[in-house]
Amino acid sequence: MTGTVNNLGDANTTDKLIEHRREIADFKQRIKNRRLQVLGLYGTPVLVVVTILTWAGSKIFLWLDSDAPSAINFIFAGFTLLLIIATAVQMFSEFVAEVWRDCQTSVRNLKLDLSLAEERHILEARRRTPPPLDRQASYKEKLPSEIVRLRRESLRYRRMHLVMQWLLFIGSAAISAITAWYDPPQPAKGALIGLGFMVTVITAAAGYFKPRERAFNLQQTADTIEQHATALELGIAPYNATEEGRNLEQFATTVEGLRAEQRKREQQLDQPQQGQHVI
Image (tube, rainbow, N blue to C red; front, side, top):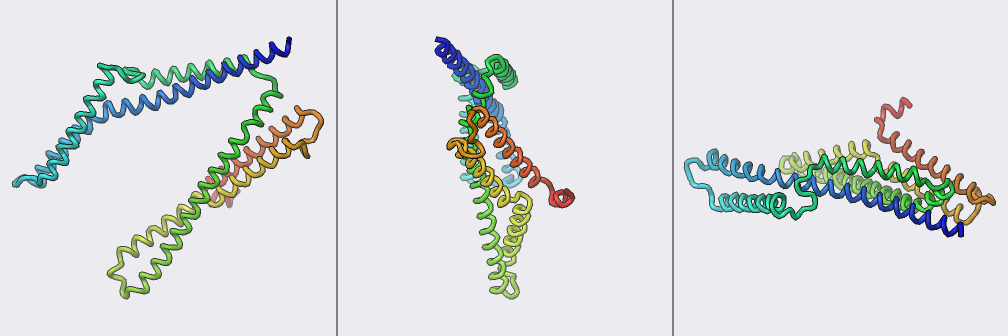
């Protein structure tokens, strides 16, 4: 009977915490939507004025003594009409029909509601904090998503590195080919300048962002965490203790150490090259 009561209490705790998380996520999405709504509500009329002024300015400075091309007038007139219609629709949705969820609500008030929701979540989580063994078991279940995230970021940096390398190969080869083809290289002077600029920028970006090193570190951390997760799942060393709580505690400590080490490596890569030599 006691076990059933405990299970019901755990279920209620989980549902309550999930409800708070959903409320926080909902407020965050509402803030994003409201920012876009306010941007369109006040930015579209500004665009109307800017478009009309640009239209009038082009008429004064370019076609003062003649008629402007009909295509130019058609483009400006069509764009202005479109912006006016968009302004009217947004004004109607905001002040008349109130079809938006947070009509006439400031982003500041929504941020305040979000802060209160986060505070309620913290207080509820503190009041309903499960025992360490349950938290460690829950931590273990969250790790697959963390491993996927690390590998996804590693793949992104590897692709960035490959794209940079191929651009460097193509740019360097094109510079040599154009230089050898034209003598002097006057017809291709612009191409040479552009390719040289591209090679310089990519070389500097590769040296600054270090995508290859970042990809290697992320992949190494993901593989190591997965190795420890597999060892815990199979009950092999170093997680072959008879007590499950001891294994979970050691596993959580090890994984947090790996994540801290990964963050330190990221910080070292973000430091200037000269600063790294000093260290």
